[in-house]
Length: 63
Figure 1: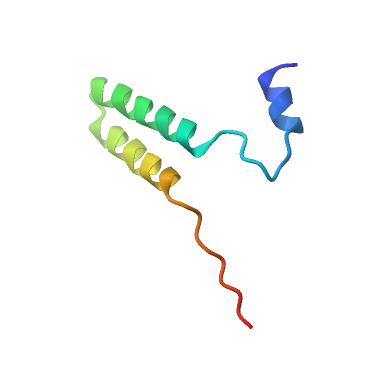
Figure 2: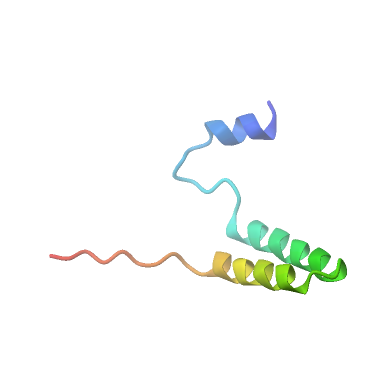
């Protein structure tokens, strides 16, 4: 079974890619963008990686 098929049948409550793997990939892309002379894109990718590391916001229940 391909990775895509596995991902489609995965439990929708579980993340398919861990935040650490996602962050690592985003940082790698940022490094590639920097080497390619795209500093603005590299900066955006780093900011996105930092957001991926943040814990999800707590849900406040009013009541």
